[in-house]
Image 1 (cartoon, rainbow, N blue to C red):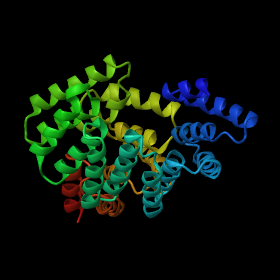
Image 2: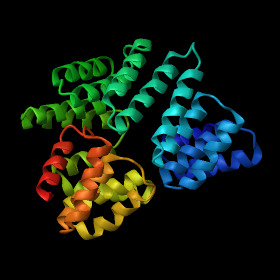
Image 3: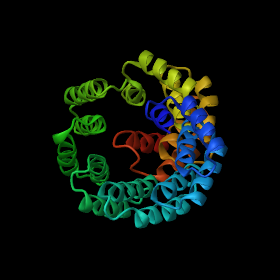
Length: 321
């Protein structure tokens, strides 16, 4: 169990999957091992095996962690209503003594609501999460995201600084950078992005979370593409495919990007960012009708999907129409 957990935590998903498979062969009633199988297979893009493992896990041990994994699978397959039902169940069944778990389940529910542009419900649920655990850094970052999407940049900045007050937070620093960009302060944004990278590297991480940011900002594009390719070789999931396609497009490899973005779309995940990238790729290739379809779908899914890129999507769609 320890080996499988360490492999998953260290993002060595092939080893994590293989270790978990061995565990389930030896201990077929071990729900924990099935949880690792879900996570590792999802990261590797083996969605059928991940789906089967999530069902087995919830059958063996119907609790908040298994319900949350089933929810993730449903969300990936475009079943928002099913994901919401599972996350509500996860929140209700979380250990009342475990405030962290309760807060986390509610935060995940908020993220699912935000994914489909339901800001009111996302805000309500993340407020419940913060009522349980007021300084939960991930919940504070989510609250900041929803405030920024609503136009309250000052409120968002306050939550992000609160999230970073105890422990430096990579995601908070990136979002502070985006807020600075939204305000037109590019120099300040770059400082926040540099701080985010420093935080990630000092915490034992690497530059992999930055490929998307660099592509969005059209900076360090060679490095972004190299990082995205390495990620894709390891994790064949829809998000690695999406980021690789976006980096290729930004480097002028738009025809190649088109085949890669199709891999990101194949589950019919209702993800505005993936749909936006697909739309911009088709636009560059001159496929105006298909580009407009993808961009409209992205903005219908979530008109606030990114503080900066959502505006680009709106402008591009208006030009196409």
